[in-house]
Amino acid sequence: MPAISASAPGKLILCGEHAVVYNQPAIAIPVLSLSTTTKIFAHPTAPKGEVIINAASQRIKENIHVLPEDHPIRRIVELVQANFGLSEMPACEIQITSTLPIASGLGSSASLSISVIRALSEFIGHPLPVERVNALAFEAEEIHHGNPSGIDNTVIAYEKPVYFERGKPLQFISIGTPMHIIIASTGISASTALAVAGVHDRWQKDPARYEALFTQIGSLSRQIRQYLTQGLTKPVGELLTRNHSLLQEMGVSCPELDQLVNVSLAAGALGAKLSGGGMGGNMLALVTEETSPTIEKALTSAGAKFCLKVTLPASMEG
Ligand code: PMV
Image (cartoon, rainbow, N blue to C red; front, side):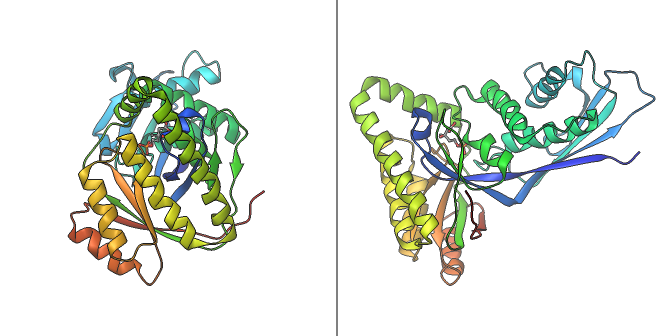
């Protein structure tokens, strides 16, 4: 019997991170050149409930019951099982491969969840609609990330640029002209949950200051959305850099991120900022096709551990 296979991309937060947790809008785009793929092989002769997890990048090849109860892969399989009200899963091997670096701010956990949900629901014979895939992936994110806004699972489930506001209907964004972005990693692995908790503590100590920062970032996201749709790259870049300054004030940047932001701006980027939880992880630089090689070289010389160029194509959305 041929394997059932499903994939999910990575993601990049363009603007509005952290403020999005406090109900401000943020913008994220899918990174389609990176993906997680889940293949399911039926084991018709094995006893019901025998599920083997094979995830080479995490060095796992185990019966699911051997994994800790709170293991992300075990939790997502159990969420799918509960969704269908199954007392046991049909016997199978779940093989997961990914080109996404783990804990890199590129959405590896949401991408894994979504590829597993898509593949398993198809294997069970009831492929789930995107809304349900998204809702299940959000439940999985909640287990592991405390208080996620839901932007990661949403952009990965829909695979389109999203304008995301917690608790409001999802909006997609039209992109007026292709946007070229370099993602560069500091090589420092940082916990998003800790960064979010840090902002929460500081907000509680000084609500007026932090709420003003969240509001300003929300207003930047609204303007960036308009400029993206109008295809006006230069003002998008300027506002991205302003977003970085506000994230610095919020205390979620670090010297390595600031250095990569400054280096890319000095090398001609239209704008640059940290992306995601901060305190390490990744930054992004808005570039042009012409400036891209120089900026990538400058970032690498300044210590970026990897650079990935992504192009956000022009698109029309409702
Ligand atoms: O670290 P990442 O790329 O998963 O991004 C986290 C984005 C935050 O706004 C900081 C948290 C969230 O849940 O939205």
